[in-house]
Length: 576
Ligand SMILES: Nc1ncnc2c1ncn2[C@@H]1O[C@H](COP(=O)(O)OP(=O)(O)OP(=O)(O)O)[C@@H](O)[C@H]1O
Ligand SMILES: [Mg+2]
Image 1 (cartoon, rainbow, N blue to C red):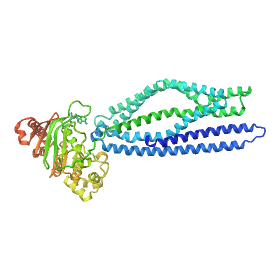
Image 2: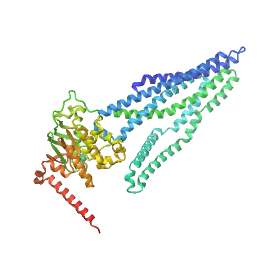
Image 3: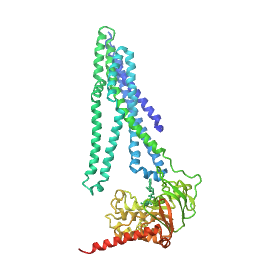
Image 4: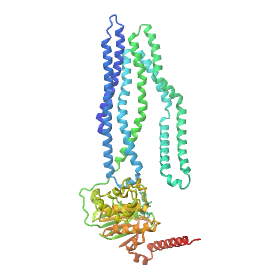
């Protein structure tokens, strides 16, 4: 809250002043009664004072709310700007690992929590603290015996509430955990619907949701059962009635024996009944404070993630080559290295194919080039410059990426293709789409290029999504392309379109491709065979086949699989 702390303090102070004015109005009313009892009554000045103080109380309260709301908006703007700027500088890999849900929660919910806290809770905090203390001071000033009576009732109420809250922290933690479980179960239930429903009617996933609900119910009932009696007692005792009764009885006694003035008694009754009630807001304020505190911690944790270091003296790439020099890399929290001693050079305009078994480290190589993460050993060079010595703009100005799971925005197809070049005109977009073999299917969509892709591109097939991503990369026209080829699509027509699109994208560029396609591998200038994080073999297709090593084995099993598919297809086409 540092950026708005001045305004927050001002709002709290004004709210406290407002509470004081309200109490002053009550005191003035008591003095009105006192004046009425005078042989020559002159109550009007006191009535005027009471009215003026009431107006002042309202004005101060409104002013405090206005200031705190403006402070809340200022804080929200500050946090969102800072978080957005910080996210932009974080390693991409961190964002991927965190998951978009968790980040969205911090950006949305946690910032909103702080907004609500500053806007509504801070004036209440000022008022809720000042009112009981000032009341107590006034009561002590008027008649210390009655002040003690009021305090006694209050103490009983507080003790009852304390009893009700004895396991509060533990129960609250369990309550929060159950809430979180329900939240996750709902999200899973909704998100997994298409998958789940193809296995059963959704009841397995729904039963998890049901179990979460049951757990929540159990915690809540135990909490309520354990605390119900004492909580009710506390709430009754802290209400106005018990205090009023005690103050009436004792006050009457003391008025009769002449040790308490009538007006003083009235003043105590008016003030004392309000004192207990003015404590109530503080009780539920603790809930909001805890919530805001948790949000602030999550925001701080995100802001504390170190950003990618920017170079002091940025270097410019000299050409379109890519070079890995003895690169070692381990994912955070994993003991084994994902890459170990990887060295290779991809000269400008060449095609380098990465192949190897699943989990061998191919995608990791691709992701180290745009600095999803930084290497733990060695260095990655683009155009002769260490990627850590380049500005993000210079690096991304050199390289385009097409990943398997291409992300499409919930936006028109045209805007999705235009992503990296906002100024591109329709002609350029269509040319790129044609080259990516996407033009025809786009025109067949209801609104052509203006059709909306659906959330995450849900309204397009996997092959279509990838061709849009290729069109995006073609339009970007970067000298280096890093490509995670999609695994073969069953539909041969789609397959052929994809091969043609890729051929277009790769023409004249330096290409690092994680290859799943025969054509790509066979025509590559060099093939790097990865195995458990190391380059096991390298060379061209024919050389590697002849060598009879890992590559030859992969190749033969691949061919067997193809042949098997072919036989399957033939068998299926023969009518029974
Ligand atoms: N974000 C991540 N966090 C932790 N470990 C990861 C992460 N991504 C990959 N790994 C691990 O790093 C190793 C290499 O993974 P990588 O994705 O590079 O393999 P790959 O060769 O691309 O496999 P595939 O052909 O299945 O895509 C694997 O052991 C994998 O479990
Ligand atoms: Mg991979």
